[in-house]
Length: 319
Image (cartoon, rainbow, N blue to C red; front, side, top):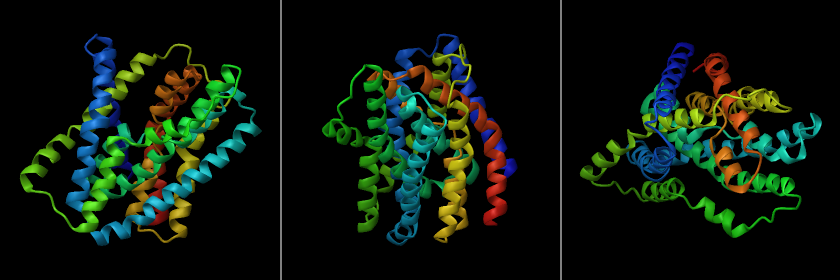
C-alpha cells in the first residue's frame, strides 16, 4: 500500500506539474481553466459516476455500500464541530473561521480524489468513492456555502444573509443528479444499452487527467508568492491530512465496515483541501488569500502524508 500510494501521489503531482507549466507557457489561461472545470463537473465526472454504477453496482451492492455514505456524513458533522472548537481555541480571526473549517474538513474529491482512488485501487475503488463523494458534496454545497457567506459578511461589516433557495440550488449539480439517477437505475435493475455505455465509459476516462491538469493550472494562477503561513493554516492542514483520517477510520471500525472500503475512505479523507472553497471565496467576497494558502499547503503536505497514512491504515485494518 505504501508503494502504490507513493507511486499514485508522484503520478498525480507530475500531471498537476504539467498543468502548471502549460499555464506558465500561456497555453492554459482563464478561459481554458473555466472550460476544463466545466467539462469535469458537467460532463466527464457524471460519466464516471454513471459508469461506476452501471458496471459495479447492483441493488444488493448498493445496500452493502450504504454505510460508506452514512459514515461519511457522520465524519463530516463531527469534523465541522471539532474544527469550530479548534478555531476558537487557537483564535483564528473571526473573518476566516469559515474558510479555516472548510479547508480542514473538505477534501478534493472531485479533482484529485477520483484519480487517486483509481490509481491505487483500480476501478473497484469507484463504487465506495462515488457514495463518499456524494456525502462530501452535500456538505460542500450547503455548509460550505453558508460558512463562506458568513465570512464575507464579517469582512463586509454585516451579517451575510443565508438564502436557502440559493443554497438548495447549489446542490442541484450534474454529479448529484447523476448519482440520484444512477441509484434509481440500480434499485430498479435497469442496465443501459452497451453502445451507450461504451460512449459513457470513454468520456469518463477523461476525468482523471483533465481534473489534475486543471488543479495544476489553478495552482499556477494562485502563485506561490506571499505564502507565509498565517494563524490556523498549519492546524487546518494537520486536521485535513491526518486527524480527519483518524476520525473516519475509527467510525468505520466501530460499525464493522469492510477493510477495503475503509482504505478507500481513508485515502479520500487524507487528500488535500478542496478547490471549491477558493472559488467560493472569490465569488462571495471572503478571504481568498487565506483559502488559497490552505489549499496549497495541503497539496504540498499530502505528497508526504498520503503514503505514510495509507501504510498505517493498512496495518490497522489488515486488508
